[in-house]
Picture (tube, rainbow, N blue to C red):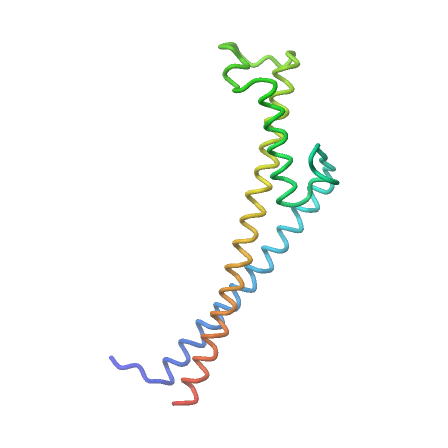
Length: 146
């Protein structure tokens, strides 16, 4: 089976359009989800020592998460040591503080991971857009040869 230059050009142009479309969606979603997370974090108004202002970006979330972890380890080095073989007691102030710190720490580290994913998604989208443009140029070049 032999594929003509014109058919090949059309196939390449289809891939170019798909790549451009998917790339645009990736970039748009990366920015949209990042804006959503920043807005949610701004509404929470989380502040910690070592962080200027509210926690609303990757660096601040990392610093705040590390600070909360350090404070949590001041209560007890591990969850197992905190419980000392017993069950969780929500009336025990140390156990309750530890659990609340663990929840906040998880929230902050999840934000750090999310900001990283947003960066990867936007970079992948930008790469797809560049590849779409390159494929489009190649497709039009092939089309002019047919």
